[in-house]
Length: 237
Image (cartoon, rainbow, N blue to C red; front, side, top):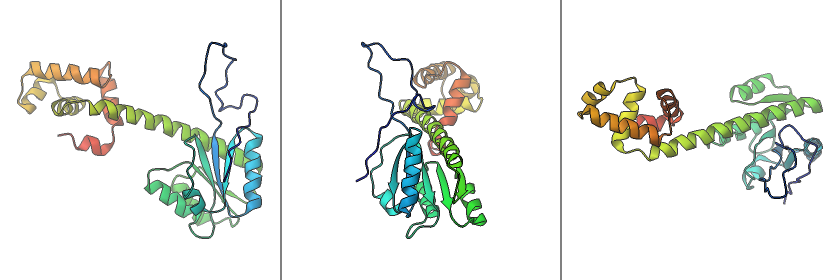
């Protein structure tokens, strides 16, 4: 079983550390980022884990992609450091698998072969970086820092999408129709004609939509609509 060390450092850039709160406050625990290292070379895994811990980043090592997929991973910001060539499922295969399952964490690839076509394939599929062994510690740390920040940004975006999807779920079928037509730039009288209802009714629906979607302006409403998953928007008729 792999244990995650919770070592602390002096104000690492991702820790969110602030001045010590008063005794009456109970701030939420801020855990350090988590890097998943997948390499069939135990010495390489150990070296990378120690490097991560030296800068306040937790790391868990795996000897194969299968081992990673069979393990329940803590839900924390971070990235993957993958060897490209491994027995069984390769690093590139894992990248494709994670993308297909909607769990596309940022990935830094490692290789001992300097395979240019393979690096191009990995980067086109969204890899953060492609490093050739032996790599400089700072090069890996820079790539990992970039991967962590990318994962944080992805998590924020995903949270906003979930929030808008939850708001959208509270709309009635008619309100969804009105929302779609508003975002297309249709005027109230045009929407009334399109839906076969009165303009007064359109205004009531429009006001309700603004409240439920928590939008204070048409611009905010349009941005909320654009955040919704494409398949959800397409189902609105």
